[in-house]
Image 1: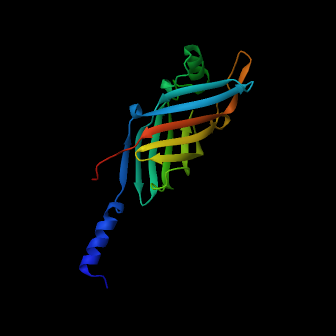
Image 2: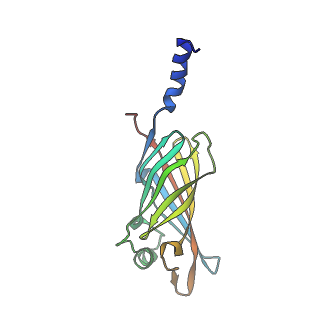
Image 3: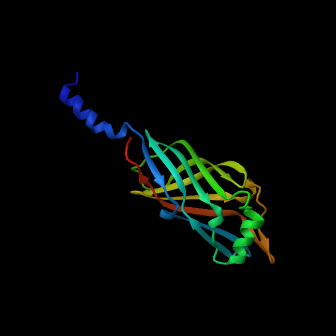
Length: 182
């Protein structure tokens, strides 16, 4: 039988793990990068945007929550190309945001790299399962995924004889600010 002192020590050790931790995300504390390769293959279009807004909760090593991105802020460094991308392909007037939702996905906060987590990506009016690779360094998180444009009813971008590949590499980095326990 456990003594009162042993029980007390056990409770002190387990107390931090008994409750959920909630992390608040702000766009200005993160970034988004994407890379699309063109044909011919030496052409690469790199873009950037703000980090996500949202909240993530970790309870019993299960991650839930959402990340939301403002697609109207995407920037490739060339205004004409940005307008072309937003108006003709992403249709940001109708679909200004992309969102990834995680529901009770296993995560180990002590494992720093290469954790694969599944979520639902809501993008361009479509919702698809996607795999996201997380790397965690204290409160800084880097997440990477590939987006297949045809899965989201987006026509493959073409302009002046250059056709983009249908796969776009996306990387986001953000600070996960822990909220005080309630």
